[in-house]
Structures are given as C-alpha cells and as structure tokens.
Image (cartoon, rainbow, N blue to C red; front, side):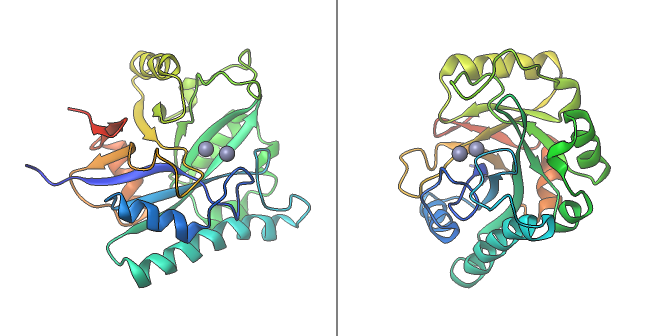
Length: 236
Ligand SMILES: [Zn+2]
Ligand SMILES: [Zn+2]
C-alpha cells in the first residue's frame, strides 16, 4: 500500500487562542503520537478568540503568533525531527466567519498592519498576491456566535473546509456541495484546541509525499494531491 503523510490543517494552541488549553509542544506530541507527519497552526487572529493582547503594537501582536510557531518548530526539530510544524492563521473577517490562511509568514503580517480592517476581498487579494492559500473554515457551521446571514464569498477562496471534526454532518455536506459547485479545493481540519482531545487523528489531509515547508504545503494543496481524512478514514 502507498505510504501517506498526514497533516492536520487546523490546530490551535493556548499561547495564541483563548479557547485552547494546550501548549504548542503538547499539540506536537499529540499528533506525533497519532502518527501524523505534521500540523499547521491556525490560531484565532485579531478579531477572533485570540489569546494575544490586541492592545500590543501591530509588530508585537503578529510576532507573538510567529514566536509560538517557532517554539513548536524548535521543539519538533529537537524531539521529533521527522515532524513538520507549519504556520497559518484562522482569520476572522466578520459575522463569526473565519478563513484558514496558509502560505503566509511573519513578513506578510508585518507588511499588512491592521489586516482585520480589510474587507474579505482585500484580505484574500493580499494573501493571494503573497502566494498564500485560503480555505474557508467550517463555512456552514451554525452556532450562536456565527451570523448565518453573513454572506459567503466562495469566488474569493481556494478551498473550503469540507470536514471539520466538530461540525454536525449536515454542515459538512453543505460545504462539500459548495466546493463542488465552485470547483474549490477541499480541506479537512480537526480544529483541535486540546492535546487530550478524542478528535486528534480523525481529520486532516494525507499526501503521497511529505511536505516540509509552507510553500510545499500550498503547492500540494493547489495540485489537489491530498486526500481528506474524514472521521479517521482517508477517503478513496
Ligand atoms: Zn477556538
Ligand atoms: Zn479553529
């Protein structure tokens, strides 16, 4: 059987997400134990449930995200050298809606102060101009904190998160239908916030080759070389 390399595309830590209870190192350990090749940290950003002080100057605010990522990366390099830690953010653009953003780095964040004031179109354009990739997080999740009348703009995205471990199945089905309608890429994410969660190992993307950098991850997504992991099973 072909070897697959699994990556969770949607992971939080408590240094940057107020709803998480785990350190970045603890999340790394949990995914190593689950047999994954890597994870992408996608912490809640400025308008989301950030654990970083919004009153900080912009450069300090965004550097806190980068430092948490670097800390996890250094930990993995020392203890689990085959495990890749990648950078991303989960950007809240209004109405409780969030986009997972991949392939951007600290320089991008420093060069775009007050990113949270951009319209979703301006945001997606800036990310794309930098070579980044956008997957809408749980587009049809229906929770009290989300305004379901807030418009979705699939024409601006590269992908939709078609499986989120904490969605109800109906919300995932709607995301699959939207991805099909708009010929979008598809991502699966654990949206994991806790290293002891039962959901760890049930979501993500499996590639036929390892991806070691944000750039390689985005290229693999663009080529649609990955298969989604749906409730612990790699799709056909
Ligand atoms: Zn959260
Ligand atoms: Zn999330």
